[in-house]
Image (cartoon, rainbow, N blue to C red; front, side, top):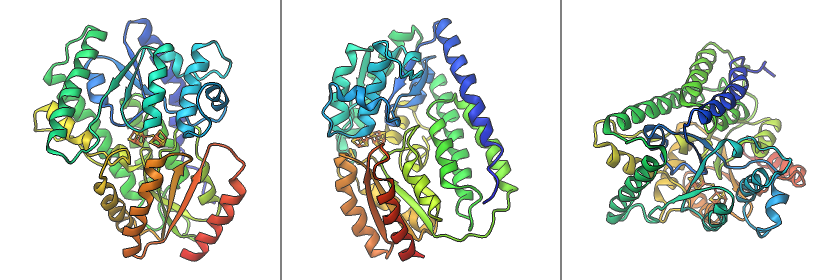
Length: 382
Ligand code: BJ8
């Protein structure tokens, strides 16, 4: 086993610095926005002089708290996120520091479970819901989403007391694109055989993008890319695997850890903690609101219908990263990603790329059983 990359320490150390930074900002009057999804454009938040952190839960310990009011048979990400809010706002002792750092929550109309959970949030935190068209390919979708983004901009202007001007918005678009380009540089290096970084290491980094400031995150990625460029990885022994499906929020690394402990190497993740978060850039030469609406509506989330762009993106990634097999990961009770698997599976069958479907929660009770299935899958694709 090769020694861990030194630049990963940077991300660990930056965490405490960022907590301090957010606390200080709040004291100075900067509004901190909590979000739960990639569909809420950071660029608009930053252009309004606010800051943001993502509150998606990957921890198990907040789930019991959520289950006191939510049904048990909904996705663990929803329960974990909601439980953290309830606990933090009702003087609990689970100490999810993130919730206490935000002034308001900006939610989004995506899956049913999230939409209904967001209806309960105002009891704990001021909540704004950004609506989304469900058929991104329809001619009316862009017009509608554009009007929703402008409304969101007005909400932020009222909240912060700052006007969002075009110049600032363009600056934020360029800044977010710079982050996306750096992530492309990082992910491109994973096409090498063997790749100079493991999937578990990449996941740790990708989870941090939702908490660190853009400057902090970019600095970490730059250091990491430089270290990776000079790293000589040991010869590869296991197959090249792609993970595709639901996001793995901070605290949840279960499947990536099992896959790599079994000897495979994860070379790419098609998820919101992978390519979905950075793949497409925002057009920089366009009117900024339109450019944002177009880019964000292209996010291939299973909440959208039809979601053909996701199917072709997965096939494209499988070829580009020379994968031997795909582990299709669904969080328990996430119907969107679970049902969409059938179309993904069909497309991959044509390409002769094997797929293993795994549905799991945040608990440990299925670790052994998943390990056995992954062992058998890796043996088949080796
Ligand atoms: S853009 S994936 S972050 S909605 S896993 S809560 S879909 S039941 S997290 Fe998501 Fe935005 Fe889409 Fe990404 Fe619902 Fe499924 Fe749970 Fe999910």
